[in-house]
Amino acid sequence: MSKNAKIAVGGVAVGLILLIWLPWWVTFLIVVGVPVAAYLALDPSQRRRLRRVTRKEIGR
Image 1 (cartoon, helix red, strand yellow):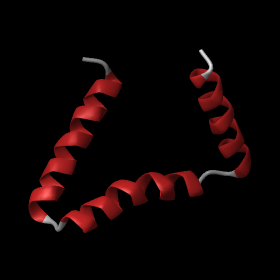
Image 2 (cartoon, rainbow, N blue to C red; image 1 turned 30 degrees about the horizontal axis):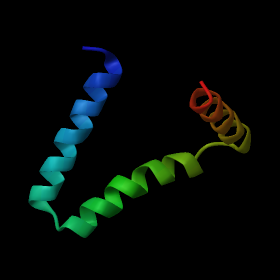
Image 3 (cartoon, rainbow, N blue to C red; image 1 turned 135 degrees about the vertical axis):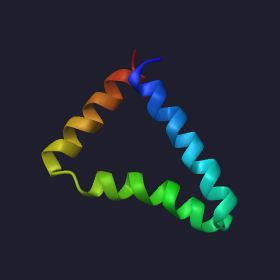
C-alpha cells in the first residue's frame, strides 16, 4: 500500500469513529475545519504554489 493510500484509509477510519462518538454536525465541522485551518496557516507564497500545482494537475 502506498503512503497516500494509508493516509486515506486512516482518514476514513477516523471519520467513521467520529461519526459514532460525536453528533454529525461536529464531525462535519472537524472534517471541513481541519483542511481550511491548514490552508490558512500557509504563507501567501505557499498558497500560490499550491493553487498553481492544483491547476496543473486538473489540466492533465
